[in-house]
Length: 82
Length: 428
Image 1 (spheres, rainbow over the protein chains, first blue to last red):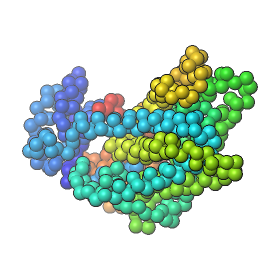
Image 2: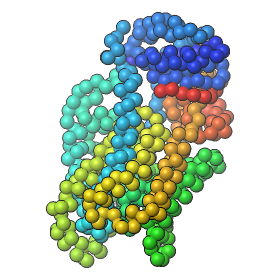
Image 3: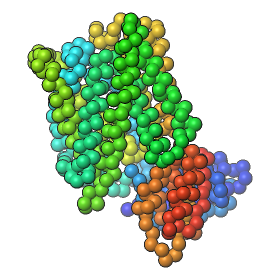
Image 4: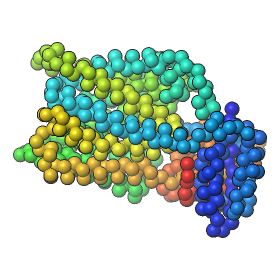
């Protein structure tokens, strides 16, 4: 049983592309979207368990230079429409 | 920490599999149309007899393949278990089952309209060569767009109008290419009438009822699968073809099949096998990625048929006419095909994406079904944190996104607040 989560990023001005390039190197991140509004980037992560999510967030994502703030929202239920 | 090779997300392999399946599905379509063209031009010229013959063989081939899909297998894929080969291609497939109730009615109607479009496909194949059949088949997109606009009570947006114009002009150019040596304009007008009228209308209704059959739930709350739908519509198409061929039987049609069954059996079996594989690949690609990209990649068949037919024409005398090699004909065919291809790709890839972050009201019952019924909502997730639901929206313009939020989502009784984030760039 896998765990999905959305990570919302606030990024320092002018660092967006560099951060995206680093995020795309992480295999557990399945999609990255640059958005308008209160966040700058939203990434979707699929991992095996919460322990792995913690490790990726703290050891990989938080190490990327240019990220000002992150918020992680774990998916409780996902509804896909055909 | 899990080893990289056993992780649930194998980004490169999954993505390349997705693109390969979509592209191969498109190329396979070109190959089977050329095989049909070969049998038609060299051996069985009567389109009704050829259609009935191919469909009877097709049903037998499909039943054998479906029997193979029942082979039990237990393996984990993308975090889910699948229990037979068929489940690998369609997650809703368990076994052959007769469609009942409303699903049965939709399957019957899908089969009826599929019969109409299939019969007209053979009629047009007899009148034209394979390289223009693929462009013809794209005209249905115009009807689907018009159907969407009428059901949504909204005017088509600019990109939709541009794509519709490109496809329409492309089809006309491709039709002209096949009539350049014809002294009368009646042949051209008949082709145009058949494509714009019955062929595309039958295809549009077929797609509509096929979608209805796949999205309607049965008494147990389960949805139907594409493999069962394919086999049952195939049966109805075969009955339709056999009925349409009755006048031709009296004119010695069966004698032609008896005479040529040996040289044509292998190409017909191969063609029907490829039809089935193309459908299965297309369905599998849809389960792995965006429908718009699958559709755009599959439209490669519009241009891939032309060089393939040219190569086949060199090896098989009589497959293409002498006029096929004229400069005017080739320029017209390429121009028409490219116009249609650009129109289809522009339409498929021009959608705008938005992410909505919604908060729900305390103490009010949530009804996710209301959200899943809204057109444009791709998927949604219940999440932890300051927001309760993340909704992914994909629609053809920002104006339409506004109308969806303002007139539908914001009016749901259990939604308290919505924050909209427009996607400027996306990596997958």
